[in-house]
Image 1 (cartoon, one colour):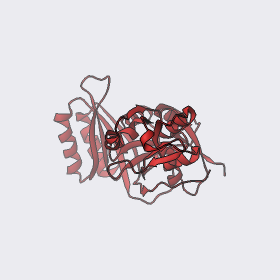
Image 2 (cartoon, rainbow, N blue to C red; image 1 turned 45 degrees about the horizontal axis):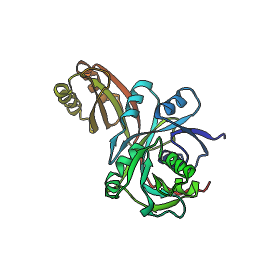
Image 3 (spheres, one colour; image 1 turned 135 degrees about the vertical axis):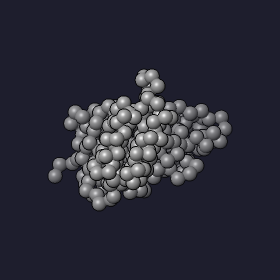
Image 4 (spheres, one colour; image 1 turned 45 degrees about the vertical axis):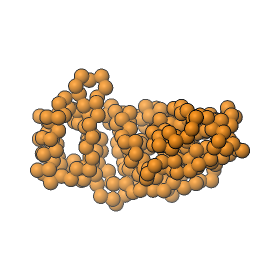
Amino acid sequence: MAPLIVAVQGELGSNSELAALEYFDGRTIDILPCYTFADLFAAVDQGHAQAAMAPVENSLAGSIHDVWNLLLDHHPRVAGEIRLRVVHCLIGLPGATLADVRRVRSHPQALAQCDEYLTALSGVTVEAAYDTAGAVQIIKSENQPQEAAIASAQAAADHGMQILARELSAADNFTRFLVLGEGVTSVGSLKSTVILEMEHTAAALPAVLGRLAARGIEVLKVETCKRIGRPWAYNVYLEFVGGTDGPAGQALAEIGEFVTRRQIVGTYATGVAAEPRLHRR
């Protein structure tokens, strides 16, 4: 069987790649690195990849709104999900010490997740990069001992770099990924993800939730986010137990009067929490 091509945002050694390796454990996959989230969605749309790992939410930094907007615009098939524990490491050149570090680079999400640790470092500035593992590549190429990156232990091993500190997050750090395109067979309970566009959430959202409650639907997530470029419009990220047929389908039909747009992102098996492993290349 030919390897499954899986698109991830970032380079080899990124947390997205580690999530793909855990989700597709036991299956041969080839990773297709993508520079942006938009590139990741395009890779699936255009058939360059059969699957993709789309991070939608982090336990510390919250929802990744760029990905939610792309879910709304692209209508991909959602095959499953996985929650990966993220272990951020401070990575420097071989022989460097923590006292040498004057600038730390990483993906904005990683910087946000490690904000408390970074704030406590004296005399250190931070700089956003397009990817965690990509930041390790950058500091390796620049070869300056005062430069460091936040990334996985896998990224440090891949590039022969030194881990200066581990477990940089202040609390349990998990990122939830939706698997786009092709997935794996799962026997987990079903959940559904829906995005609603509403003009007056303060007035209409209680009515929407009331319709779901009246049908006995257990809501797992509800979050509002401003729809950029649309005056007074908000997206509502809604997740609930079960599929979108039966009582849930009836409730979704009833809320039409309260929303300007409704998109069912997908129904899929609830994912498990996974620990990242160090992989030999």
